[in-house]
Length: 113
Length: 111
Image 1 (cartoon, rainbow over the protein chains, first blue to last red):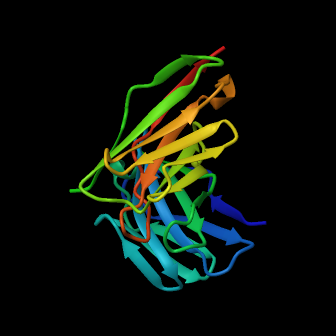
Image 2 (cartoon, one colour):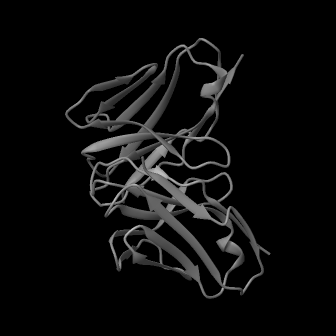
Image 3 (cartoon, each protein chain N blue to C red):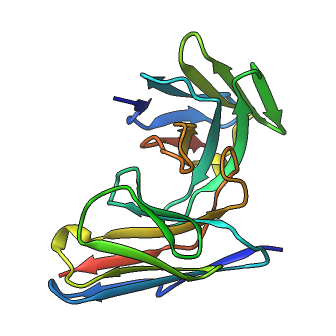
């Protein structure tokens, strides 16, 4: 069966510090991968998605970046965090490019102070 | 621009009743629409997918309808239980490889 991991589970970082969140998927190959952010009490905002190694599509211009160094690994990064980067970060995968349901990881709660 | 609307107010119902949640979309015609459940502090969980040529889809106590004329999907939970309390998100296809989610409606089932 497929599983998706995210770490860390929680993170408190000062403004201006770097960020690296990691997501890995097991039990499937060539998945589509996604990063979402959810602010408190708000909906899901798609940040990045990837259909293959090295292929990243950015949805929102901001100080975040994403990379996919391996087929089942997706990394979200920032060189300098802003207060507005606080939120709940979710990684997800799907097997089909269109119409496929998405499976979400447990999420990372990021607080920028 | 494309817009997805879900009732932002929480829906409170009594146990055993049918809960009905609404998802409206404007300025596009999705080929399919998905519904997810999200519990506090957790990632969303996929529930159902309905395609534009399907008027209705059922899974156990769940039923989804898709009216492409009204540009609306209804999500029903029959014989609701307190364990059904959660936020429910709709995600219509927007013609891209990634989903766009509505902001969700919180359902609270009172025992």
